[in-house]
Length: 481
Image (tube, rainbow, N blue to C red; front, top):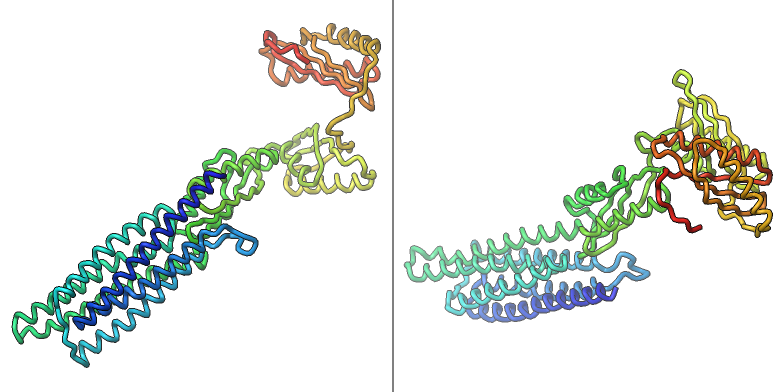
């Protein structure tokens, strides 16, 4: 976290330095163009002076916007202050459009209604050349900082000053034509109007750029998703193992920050922990494309293609707060008959438990119309951790002898040696490890284990539960208990 905070502070410092360089450049150019424009009477240069004056205002707005937008989220602004940058870009657009109105008006006056002498002096050319050099320098600084820190305010400023380079070039061309008219004779006097034409061209360039900036600023303020980003993020999230499909996905931008809300559909039979791990993996992958901001992943359970009947019943039961086991289905001419055990909270009355199980049966039929009949065995929910009582050594030794005697005479399972006996509130819990032919099928091995468990419970009184663990012969197993 300290490294992230250090990087954020470094980014803030770089962004502020870039914005301040823009302010300094704007002050210098505004003063220089104003003085030379008044000296020469060039509308093109005065238009550029007014343009630079508003550049100064825009640069100040950007500077303060960058300072405010870097504030962390608080109780009032939960998404942070990033949209201040977008608001500053919109303000800059409005200022530029106001400038254009004055430039166009004055240019039309000079073209058709009044005549003003323009002096195409070395000062006029010099100030515009200096303007181009300064604008090239600060636009590069701003672009570099904007791309590095994904700042729309700095990017707007950089784009703004990039257009100043072209507009200054147009003014130089206009002044050049005025200079030529003075030397080519009276028949070329109409070239004097080139200065006003240059001012109109400057205005058109500024209008175009302003509308582009304004469109982008308004789009972000109205939470328009960045073009193509939603599809890219959906494609990345879909590649995470465990994601079945992508649900609704929303993307909004605030300054340099991007906020993503997306839903991923996962197999409903997975555990809560597995679903959480999938969500974390999606968050991590998507966050690689959202360098600053926040990603929220919502998980929706969906039915997986190929889900078997037992899994479906288990999921429906979990949705109702119940658990099922020993689910058996019998198919008769395309119709299913289901038998199952349902575990309910032990403090329920029989009537309450029966109502819950009836809801489960209706839900199963609604989702699986092919199920014709369901028979449920109701039992109390198993205690997660059963208390263990001390066992009398002599009694334990007798139980061991009886259990091992039953296991020894049982055919199909060999090497039954590891035996654990624990005393609980309702009797003994027994765990027995045995070996079997590794080529047996799982169904055959399970049948042998199940038969031995039943035989031990039947022959030896006082045993509540038996678990037989079957391992393949030849496996080296730890002897620790």
